[in-house]
Image 1 (tube, one colour):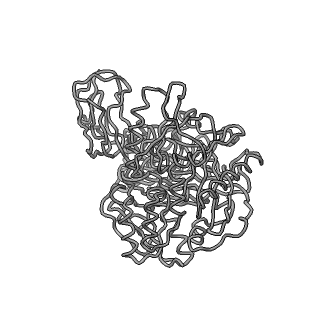
Image 2 (cartoon, helix red, strand yellow; image 1 turned 120 degrees about the vertical axis):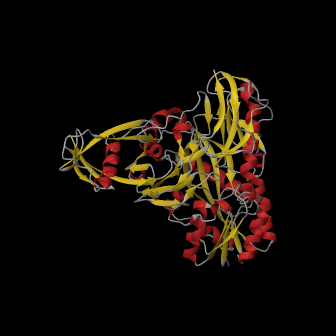
Image 3 (cartoon, helix red, strand yellow; image 1 turned 90 degrees about the vertical axis):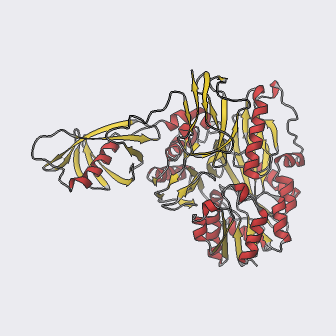
Length: 613
């Protein structure tokens, strides 16, 4: 029996596991890095143990420290969550050797399947030994881990070597294993997977299909269950292959077998020997708690002969602190408010928490269930559109537009969805009255100090910049005897946090929240600009600024001041939130300044280099 469980992970998955443990009467222990000292998963646990340091390699990837933490806290079991050490056979063995219960598959099954190269060999699929022009495009992929890290699509033969090196570096940082391999890249396919659950008594459940085709950087963004449009014959084939993979490794616990489906043919991708980020959609349609079932299997309990019948449809969207229009650049800062009503929300953050640079920028997973796919998709899109998200730039608008795109609503999507549609999905559409609402809310607060004058006066002027597009907007209003006024609208009500405007016979209400110079008006984020801009705040043309806080991990070989560079040429690589971001030359010219060196930590906006044409 499990009495006290340590979760060797962080964020929303740790919080998710702790909630199940509370329902089961199991005590919980969190581990945390220095960067996560006051994180939500730490606050929700019954006890917590510090892992000194901040980088994953120093903390959550240190298996020996985690085992010691479990022993020090009196835990009798460890759950790895997903990511980090969840697919590390050596870690699983160390847990078992320490006399602790391992909530996961046997180490032998992890070894057989967690390495994608060995998994393919087990199923008779060989990676490419050498890449030729005829093989392009190809996919460079990390052998360990997942989540899109250590993965690159290569379309030019001359780029293979560089992308292999970049993938190795990223995989080593994220998983502690730099092994990569190359396989053909199949375009136009759907990413379909089968959730499995197996016990130690020979029972294997195939728990439905999921479609995870909407991806950015090979990391899933929107997932749903069941996968729409599959024939009964193809579904049965997917079940058969998934169960075969589980039985071949004497699997126990939860796992996922992933496929790329093209037409009526399924191509095996990999088996993830852990719980997946998208497991909630399976839970919703089957009415199960997969974490509770993992714990039951780890305790030696037998599963019923067959799983329950599925019902309805579930859709999950991953809410990230990132700017999709800027190369999916992760964002940092304070999350002032996060509220999504009417759907399930799994999150590792609460209001007031800080989003740092060290880990994945996912804020939460929003999950909607309904009797039909159409209803579930509409429900989730509406909940996200009305959500209160105050803080760094997020992908919320992208999610809403993706859920409402005809290709998605008609289930015609594939893994190239964002390659085709990203510009349209990220185009900024500003509510024209949002800046005015912000100005009126600000003016209301100051009007208590005598804003109205008994003589004609010039209008008050406020300037705002919309985020993330950076466009500036100027609004004008007046203080009158009857209150605040503006051209073209009727100010029905003005308060510090609520503005009601009527324009062309339509009345709209705007909720306003202010945090420093950031103003949130409904779903619009604005930055209040000073009345008189700082004339010294100008950058030299050709300046390359850090798009996010992070660490410089590499500079291009031989790059030095005075070097000739070509537009688009990679100059350096910045790592933030477990992703590498390539900084390229904006124009063809000369590198006149280089302020970056490997290991340097930079803040957003830091000057990295200057290229003059």
